[in-house]
Structure formats: C-alpha cells, structure tokens
Image 1 (cartoon, rainbow, N blue to C red):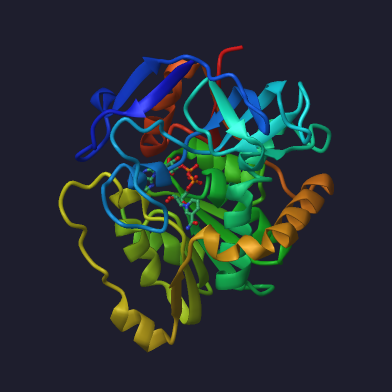
Image 2 (tube, rainbow, N blue to C red; image 1 turned 180 degrees about the horizontal axis):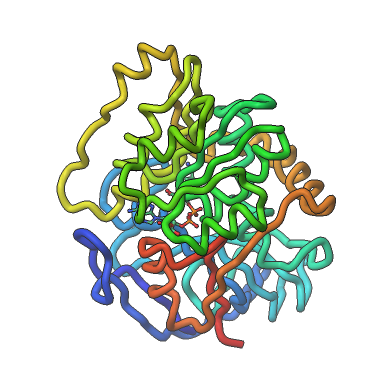
Amino acid sequence: NKQILLAKRPEGTPDKNTFKFVETDIRTPEKGEILIRTIYVSVDPYMRGRMVDAPSYIPPYQIDDVLGGGAIGEVVESKSDRFEHGDIVLGSFGWQSYYTAKEDEVRKIDKDIAPISTHLGILGLTGLTAYFGLLDIGEPKEGETVVISGAAGAVGSVVGQIAKIKGARVVGIAGTDEKNKYLKEELNFDEAINYKTSSNLQQDIAKACPNGVDVYFDNVGGEISDAVHVNINKYARITVCGAISSYNLEGKDVGPRIQTTLIKKSAKMQGFTLGDYTDRFGEGSEALAKWLNEGKLKYEETIKEGFDHIPDAFLDLFEGNNIGKLLVKVDK
Ligand code: NDP
C-alpha cells in the first residue's frame, strides 16, 4: 500500500520536502469493514491550510499523517452487508492506494448518472460550494453583473454557469488566455479578463462591467479582489469563498482594505465554509444533477495520471495549471 504523508510543515510554497512516500501493509478488513482500491484522488487548495498547525474549521494534519482528502475507489473486499465487491465509493481517505474503511466512513456512488470522477467535482463538494456560495450569499438577480475570480477553476467555472442560469451577466477573471477563451466560448461567460496580462485590472473590470459589480464571488483574495472591490455597486454582495493568493505567503497579508467601500455602498461581504450547509446538501446535489442532465451545466477536468504525481498535481493548483477540477487518476 502506497501512502503520502505530511513530512514537514511548509513555509511558503510546499515542495518535495513537504511530502513523504511510504509503503505499508494492507490491513485485512474485519466485520463491518471494506477494503478500497483508490481510483481517483482529489487535490484541493484547502489542503494547504491543513498543513499549518493552527485552529480552523477543519483540524490540521499532523506530521506523518496520510494527507487525507476526497477520494473515490472500488471495493475489492467486503466484510460489510452494505457493500459488495465492485461497488464504487466516495470518502476522505485521501492520498493512499488502498484503504480499509469502516462501513460508515464512505458512501456508495451511482456509476450510471455521470462519470464517477464528477463526484469529486461538479456533483461533489466543488459543485455544492459554487451552488450555496453563489445562491445563498451572492443572491444574483436577473440582469445583475456577477464577477468571479479563479473563474476557470473547479468552483469558479460552476459559479459562472449557475449565474448564467439565473440570468446574470457573468465576467470571469483567470490567469491565461486559453482559460478565458474556454470561459467565453464553452461556458458562455459574457467577458473574461486575464489578470496576469492586464496592465490595469481595475479599469479592465470597469470596462467589462459597464453597470458595475452586483455580486463578487471571490476565490483568490489579494490584489485581484482589491481591483474588483472598487467597482462594486450599492448593495453589492461579496461571497468570500477562498483566498488562494495568500495561502503560500510567508509574511502577513496586507488588508483587509475594503471597509470604507462597504460602508459607502451598503454592501455585504460574507465568508462561509461548505460545512455550514451540510443539512441542505440534498437540495444542492439534486439541482446540480438536474442542470447537468439538462445540459445547462458543463464541466472540465484536468486529470493527472499516476500515484507518484499527486504532490505535483497539488502544486499545480498554485501555478494555475488546471482548467476545471484537478484530479489524479491513480495507477491501475
Ligand atoms: P481551482 O480549481 O480554482 O484551482 C486553483 C486556481 O487558483 C488555479 O487554477 C489558479 O488559476 C488560481 N490561482 C492560483 N494561485 C493564484 C494566485 N496567487 N492569484 C490568483 N489566482 C490564483 O480550485 P478550487 O476550485 O478547488 O478552489 C477555488 C477556491 O475556493 C480556493 O481558494 C479554495 O480554497 C476555495 N474553496 C472554499 C471552500 C469553502 O467551503 N469556502 C470549498 C472549496 C474551495 P489562474 O490560472 O486563474 O491563476
């Protein structure tokens, strides 16, 4: 059994010293347990936060912990009445090639509604984050302008499409022309801005949003958000979903720098974690699956292959080397 452990807490950007590869024995399942062979592993920005030894909404990893996170696998041995050989299950068993799980640690997923990998993306926590963050906090109305940072990523690309379903004008901000072409041509975003090549982001946002910004769905924080904030309208809503631009900072971040604007614009800014919505996951999953079936939602996945590439894939998130959800398909 191959596992990847947290070797050392990173200062700044994680590197190869952050991770440790080990081989362990596979534990034979006992009554009420199953043995899972991992198929897909999710790599997610929030895992960077868990590498820091600080209290948060989710406990930090300890040194030598397996890097836990969303994963999908096949049941290869079952001592549980609830699962049989060949079932596909979803859990948080993370970066390991096999895992012996208690039957209530994982959930069976339906292989027939969509490719199984979607349960780590658009039909999983990614889609739900987009759904609740946009609709509950952003509350976009028909004809309003919604701006999304990290727009071509897993969460951002779903947010934009839901905003279109709700009749909003949608403007994405992402880091490459290829991503922006995808946003406009494939996902029907109205405008897309490349923050890396823009010489004046604040002005480019103003140009792309002639009626100002009513909803800002923030995945990145930092200077990109500064440039959006100055363009917000009266009664704007700001969903603070993520701040990936600050996750690898070694020093303190600057800011917050928006209070005066919030006051002048009577605007609302609210953070959230998806955990706030667990009792409404059913509603969210149903809506996402329905839109997917109706062809109203599209999704893209960037899939790396090979167990040994999981840490590289994780680091790709911070380099922007993904369109849509980034996953690793573990060796057969
Ligand atoms: P993504 O698929 O969006 O991947 C990360 C993307 O962030 C990269 O592709 C890159 O795109 C962009 N990025 C990386 N570094 C920077 C930077 N310094 N400045 C600006 N953009 C950067 O990841 P997810 O969709 O999984 O997550 C998006 C955000 O949502 C994250 O901040 C995450 O922490 C947060 N999140 C919050 C949840 C919650 O419950 N509140 C739940 C899930 C996610 P580009 O090429 O455009 O730079």
